[in-house]
Amino acid sequence: MARFPVIRLGRLLIATVLEELRDSDAVDLREELSEALEKTGALGVLLDLSAVEMVDSFLGRLLGDVALCAQLLGAHTVVVGLRPAVAITLVELGLQLKGVHTALNPEKGSALLRSLIARDGHAKRPNGR
Amino acid sequence: MTESGSDGRTVNAERQSALIDEQRRTISELETPVIQVWDGILALPIIGSLDTMRTQQMNENLLQAIVDTGSEIVILDITGVPLVDTAVAKHLLETVSAARLLGAEVLIVGMTKHIALTLVHLGLDLSGVTTRTTMAKGLQLAFGRLGLEVVRTRERQQVVDSPLSLDD
Image (cartoon, rainbow over all chains, first blue to last red):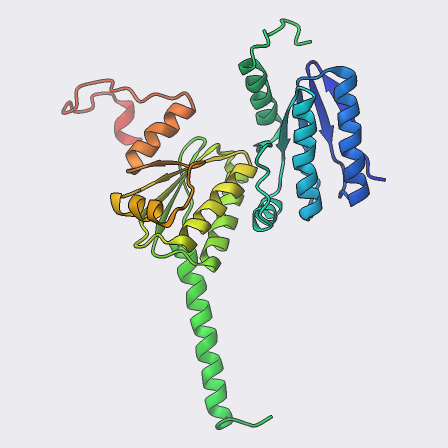
């Protein structure tokens, strides 16, 4: 089973995939993220996929599912760290991750998430919680 | 299996096709430079027609450049593309989508009336893509997206009198 620690940081959840995702792992990831979102009421999910070197149509669709679930649970999803080869593969498969926001690295991703959350009208809290 | 012609001729043909392949590679590398025009802004002037192979090469170069420079905006200049048909538009959209997956926004500049009419006529949906007519307008938009502003600091014809800016 692949490891993907889900860390809570203020109003954000940070999920890092540490190794290649097999189909069953990807399903676990979806379940686990949904559960964490429900439990914490986080407003954003940062999904770091920089360790992923191979994607197929299943994984591509699953990323869309994760974003959709998150949206239903009131959170934005930003996928960060996609490798160029992975991006090309996804596009060639016709999966453009329409509902998913993307950023180059975690730093830019969290900035994007914060601005998305701010746009929703959630007032900034001074201590970030 | 039949031997066609002499061995010499076969070798010659092979050599020629290898040469053509090599030249094609060289041309495609020359044709798609990725230029960093500003911190966070890449420009990609495309000269000539876009085929599948060239688009792939271009995408690889571009995506690597986005990762290397951490750029957020890519300006795709199609001024030098003679013809935009369904295939070319599809290739452009591929580039836009791939760059987006790395968190970069792609602006297409060099749109002409002719290209716009063709695209509309072909019924192609470019609604997700920001387009402008000239590189200057694209650059201005890019600056806007990054929160930058270009300001004139002195009158135009004035010769520079700052000691720093002469030799640098």
